[in-house]
Length: 375
Image (cartoon, rainbow, N blue to C red; front, side, top):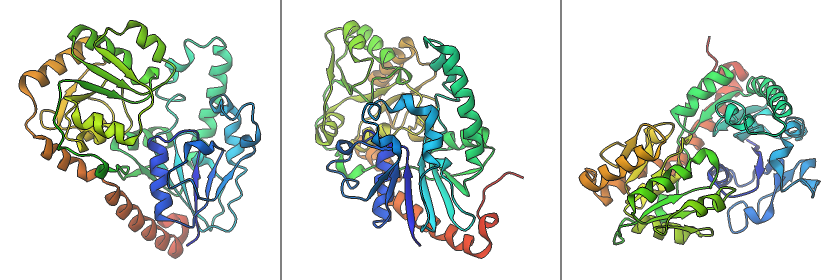
C-alpha cells in the first residue's frame, strides 16, 4: 500500500500540522505534498527529514510568506500535484487539500479539520471590514463552488469532532467518521503545585475572541498570562491592565509548565476541536470555555471545567467566579486521566486500523464499497 500525504500550507506547527506529523509517523515512507513548505516550521519535528513535494506557489518568494492572499489560485495549484504511483492518498484538509485529483483505482481518504471557515461559517466576519469587499465576496463565492465540487472527489471523510462532522454534512452532503486528533498528553504533568493565575494559549486572531478574555480579567483583577502571538497582540496589550501579561515565544516545555501551574485555562473562541483544551486537561488544569464547537465534546461541565454560553466578558467573569467558588468535581489527576481518551496512541491505532479496512474494502469493490454518501 503506497501512501501519499497531502497538506495545504506548512507555515507553522499548529494543530493540523501535529495531525500531519502523526500520520507521517504511521506511514514513514509516505512523501508529504503541500502547496507551500516553510522549512523553519517543521525544524525539530518528525516532518523535518521527510520527503516534501511542493507546488509552484512555493517558488514565489515574494508571496510564499503571505500565502493567505493566494487562496484564489490554491484550487488550481492543489490539482497540479502528481499522485501517480500511489495507492492511497490521505489529505489533511482545512482549505483545499481535499481537492487533489486521483484516479478511480486510487483511494482518497480525507481527514478534515474543517471546511474552510472563512468561506462558510465565518464568511460575514471576513468580508464586512474588507476594503475590497466586492472582490473578496466574489472570490469566496467562486471558492465555495469549487469547494463543494472537490468534496465529491473524496472516497471517505474523517472529521476531528462531531461538530466538524455536522459541518462536512452541510457543506459537502457527506457523512464523516469521527476520529479525534492526536494529543501528546505524555508531555504534560498534573503533579505541579498550582498557583492563582490563569492562562490563555493560542493565536491572537479575531475569531479566538482573546479580547473578551482580556476584558473579563481586566474586571476580575486576577492574574492572566496570554501565551501566543498574532495580529491582535498590540491592540490587546494596549487595553490590558497590569494583571494581564503577554508571552510571545514559548516552547513546548514552557507551555507544559505554564499549564501545569495555572489555576485554569480560559478560552472564549469556538474551536473545531480544541487541542489546547485537551492539553490543559492533560496538565490537570480545569478549562473555562465557550459551550460551542469541540469544547462541548472535550470539556465536561462541572467535572473537568466550566462552560459558558455566550462569548462576552460578562459570561467569562461569571464562569471564572463559578470556578473560584465551586471548583470542579474532578481533581487534577482525574482531569488528566480524562484527557487520555485523546492520546496520540489512540489516534494512531484507530487510523491504522481504519485505513487498512478501507483499503481492503476498496480492493473488493472500489469506491462504492467505502464511500460515506447519504442516500
